Structures are given as C-alpha cells and as structure tokens.
Image (cartoon, rainbow, N blue to C red; front, side):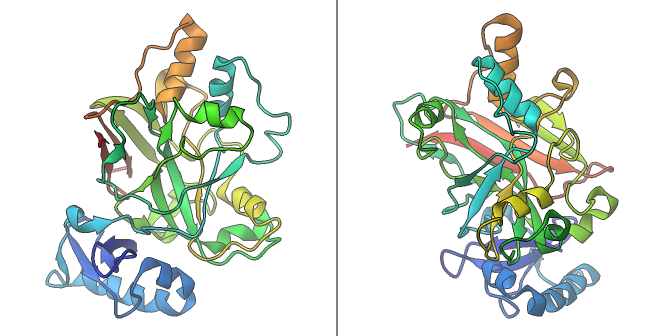
Length: 327
C-alpha cells in the first residue's frame, strides 16, 4: 500500500491511498481519518485499508486523479522524529574535513538525535527561510521508517516487526548555523529546520526482496540545481540497520506509534563513482582533496530533487522536489 495525506480536514489532513502508477488516489477517512490514527490502530485498520487498496487497483473508476499539489506530507506532524547516522563514511568525511575523528564507540552505538517533527513538509513545499542571511542550506537524502508502538527494551532481533511504513526524507540542514550550535554543547535548534517527506509512505511488502526486513535496497537519485549529486543504494555501506536504530531508541523508553526514524544522509565508500547524499559531504571531500570546498550550498531560488527508483525506473515513493524560498 501507498498511503498519503490530502490537505483537508485540519492540520493532520485526510488519509488516502495512492495506486502504484501514481495515477489515482482514494480518500479512506471512513477507515481511519488520518495516518496517525491508522498507525495508532494498525491491527484493526490494516485489513480494511488493504481491501480498499485492492479495489483502487482493480477498478479504474475508483478514486480521483492523483494530484500531488493537494498532498501534505504523509504524516504532517509526528510526536517524535529521531534521526541517526548509519552511513559512517558520511560521518567520517564531514569530521575529517574539519580535523575531527569519529567517536570511539561509533561502530558499536548508533549516533542519534531528536529532530523537529512538527511540521513535516510536503514533498513540494518550499524550504522557507528568512531573507538577508547566508544559512548554508543543505539537503540530506534519507530513508525513514514510521513505527507502531515499540516497547521499551525491544531487541534488534524483534524490532523490525514494529516497522509499519517506509518514507523518503529530506532532512534539511543549515550548515552555517549547526556547527555553532553543536560547539555550545547542547545540540541542534536553528540548524535543523523543518524536514520534508516523500509524497507517499509505503508498506514494506511493496518492495519484495529489495526490503530485507531492516534495510531497503535500490537506486536513490539525488540532484541539486538540476545536476546529479548522487546515485546511491541505501542498503549498501551501512554500519547499522533500522532494527538496530529502533532497539537503540527504545532502550530506556517506549516509542509510540507514529515515531519517525531516519537513517541519516546516504553515503558510499566509493563517492567518486556513486556521489553524495548531501552537499556537505561533497564539500568535505573537496576540502580533503584540494584544501578548498567548491560546491556551493543552496541559495534562494535553487532547487533539489530526491527520488528512489525500482529496477524498471519507476518511482517508488514519488519525488521530493523543493525550492529554497527567502521570506
């Protein structure tokens, strides 16, 4: 199933299904009014949602034409957004460029922080920032999962069964702001504005063998200013899995249904061939190789595109396409 949210009915919108060809969508508020409500009561509503999804695919007269402009983020706000870093090659490059090392336990314990989950932007919403300041606007191309309830103490071996949906995520970062905040020793605030989600959230069964229960494999294409930045496989070159992340996050607390967990900016051990999942990493390698970064961060009026494709080239989640807007 591909689930989305139509911009109607309040801040949390109206739950809808989207067909695999992105040609039609069907509001299903009679089953669950919002995606959060569906995740809260997944055991009850999953069956009726799948029945409605079968009807959408079987009968061309069911639903209305797909219209991305009508969509909010699949989950317009979440009670909890946790972002991690399972691609330690990315973390290594960023730190090496500034003369730092990875934490000593980086390969034993996932790096994770609490991100801003309200609001989550739609895939085509602009990245809006106050005019008159150089923010160092960057993207971070990620895969994320939305969970059901995850009990405290859940092991990595059992954590995968609590994953309900997968999404793409653009974790927007302000590189001119975040380092100053981190240096103060109390984490991000202004350096992490609102992030965006793909047009749809997808149940794991839709991916077949590309989903191994804890990592998603495939082709993730990242572009900035109309030029290719990366062509990566999110299931490669990882140091942890989503199961590891859920177990880590639930070590001392329950995770409530609707928790969003991001895997961090994609990266490859072969960046010369595969490219990058964010501008900062491209700049880090430029710094290491030449002593001077060249690739500029995004400015007002410039855009990005993040999309994951299947083996035939079809879009799995729809594309995140955003433009920086000075306000």
